[in-house]
Length: 131
Image (tube, rainbow, N blue to C red):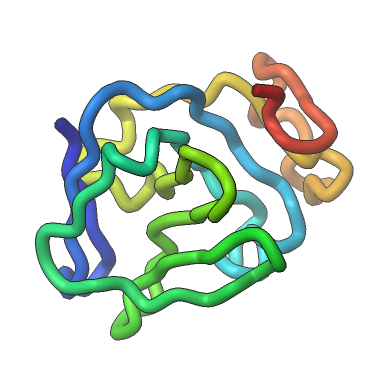
């Protein structure tokens, strides 16, 4: 079991099991939602996540997905595609983020030019991670 939460501590969660995949997402929605060059996500089954303190706020960032975040401090926590049995947890919100290793970069045509090279050992996927 892994634990994580937001910057201010208002929202905490646990997630069970191993992630299906861990990726750096370079899409413009992630960049804008986080105010960062990319977000690193770990994909788990929906049933693996349990909020243990507080409840996140949510924002519909597209017709198919919700982003969950702390309403107090704004920390990005979860990307939830409603029609799928999977959700993405921000690796940085985990208490031990270094326990997970990214396998690839996704949505690479949106990757910021200054980010090329730091992750040269990873596969690049234009679009979402294949099922």
